[in-house]
Length: 357
Length: 125
Image (cartoon, rainbow over all chains, first blue to last red; front, side, top):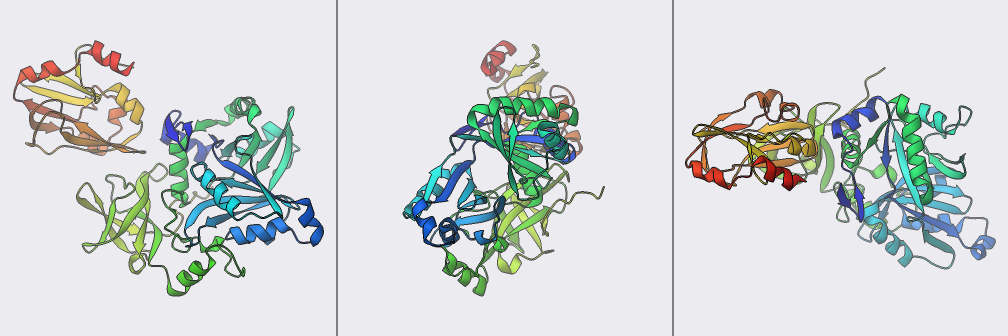
């Protein structure tokens, strides 16, 4: 067990590799109760004024993606930026009602996120942290659909990708979203904190015949890195903006105004100085790790932010911020590991693709 | 957790087997189970001279790289090349085929500072 953002969490229950393979081949379950949940809603007075959702107008100023694209019951990946365009957090925003949004944020940034959002709040909308009231699990892997039906009934309809639905379970009501952080099909389930133990045990019980394994932070990290999903605190930080991180897809620069927009427009025009790119080691050897220096022809061109031995590929992989001139697919670089240089190649995302079945 | 009675141990979870004027060194069953999934071992160079508690090898799991320390002063005379092809030997046979290196020691009295099985067992609880 390790301390993590005020929570005590397992890095692994049995073995990172075993848990990783369970998710790629069968199904795994992650306790993600540490993640923060905020509710943003329009106050009754503001709703009367126009037909427009006041909450949406405000969220569009605070977040990079366009919440106008969200129908009730759908979600999107987005960023909360500081005034310099740097990333405070990456999160998912769900529209759970006409005038109501759920924000699912990283545990380590939840307090900072709340403070920043609260600072920009006005009387037209309310912001509430429900982090302590909800537990959550991520159920991920090819058998997650079968487990969904084993839990909620054969006739219960699975939500579509990025959709969220309310589903009754025994004496309680759950929110089930078709989202994840592993590259496998799966769902994330939110429930009242009091029901956490009951739901966790029900999951393991009904998932047994599907080969379910409880999975820790270690497997969560190797799975997401194979897909090149960024980890806040490692690949994202207040010093980096989404364009540098290669995540401009989740930024709507057509929106007239949002926090950090000016900086992103400039970065886009001039091109970022550095870019986050995935790489793969050229030979078997020591796995790359965060903070290892990256070289090209003896010149230092950047630093590794995430690195591991990929359990799916049995090969060293990672992501690094490199000066843009060198951040090209196919470029050859050297990673310095304990004073020795090991060659690597810049790759396309993702680093792992599921074999065609 | 296996803690053989005929070995000596360090606080940093190495085991030591005396073989005349040499010692064979590996990591304990407890250490391998904490690390899990050893994926790479950086072996010490032959003839390297080391002092007690000096980092001498690196064992890497999926999650992290861990230094392995020399238990006493000596010179490296053997390294387990089999670990280069199959680092998982450390997980499967920590006290046998998973040994890491052999050190020719200078002073057998240095070994008196190491723990016996009972003391190591007490340490890991």
